[in-house]
Length: 517
Ligand code: FRU
Image (cartoon, rainbow, N blue to C red; front, side):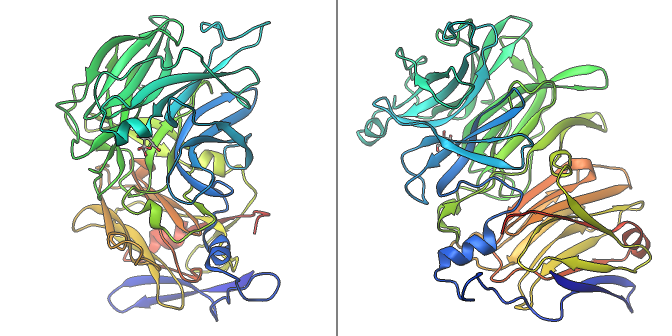
């Protein structure tokens, strides 16, 4: 642990600078000889997160098939176990009781002659509608795309089909259904990522699946025979890329139930590359309709993609995404593994001037971890941060909206800045000078998020976990998730704002106490 003392200085043009500084830069050492044997070993220490899921080794992208049963959250994920770049996709598997501490499980679903295992979902088939359950066992059924590489390479258009598998041991081992695929490709190259939900009103399973520039709905009584219902999205929302990984769920707000349709798109994100847009409206078992024509984004950062929600965990909607972007995901400077999942986020709705928006809240699950909270009042206090980068939450409230910039930096001069700019009315994360970036020319950049809230009160919190920041402003109306790669850990926190009182009254840092390296 490094002791860090807070220095307060009011600069002449009434900017308050709160600085947490170390006397010297921590020297990066491994435990044995003080020298890292390889870049891979160094990346383990510098970038392997503390409170986010990462695969033990190999490549990961989208979270898949998330369901909850008997106190256990299951997370599957797009996984290439033999390489740190995308390749033959399997479903990796991990389990957790609190959505933060993950136990690695053996690979769940392997590619077969129909194709690789692309993204999809899983449901607890409570009523055994599929008939897979024998002797009173409740089957879990997963529904995913099988991508046939040979088909793609020989120029066919029907190489993506929807298949199912089932598990009779609560999701640990899986059998492929012999009648796969259950939905054959209609002759469109991009036809993937089925998300299935139980639609209580019509007592049917509903599948939402991405089809090039829109989504299609299918219905089924047994998860095997599917009937096409309708399409949505061709003339609405963003169309600068291909639609992928859609989701459909309900949220209650002001005594009304709304249907929320999310759809990831790549490219086309508000700050380039991959991102997730959403629509709020109604779904009657056949069609999704919406009155709003605004394009809305779940997260304005560049590193939350393919975000979908858990199944069978009750009425709470918990989403998790892939914390990377197709622009540079294959090139980021980690070696044993590549990519992490975002923190789990509780979704809700908020009405801003008659328009309904999604809000995301990442605090609930993380807050259950042991932590050390340090509050700063009237500019006095001592800040202690662990030397080799632990995970922490920074937060403060403002009664009167004013610009601020929080800068995390190291003594090499690398810094990651985030905050609010009142001239443009935008939140931002600027990772232009955050550290290693040459692996991709588009990585070093400032990302912006136009403020949605109109009230003068504002609050923010941000989770920082070695190589990622998740920044939630105004109760999660504006969210930004970005990754970054400092050469050595940041050891300074500077807050620059002209609202001295708000910051010194409420500024807080909570460090999560983890046993991991
Ligand atoms: C989204 C995606 C999905 C696809 C999967 C393949 O990131 O492209 O559309 O199923 O990744 O790994």
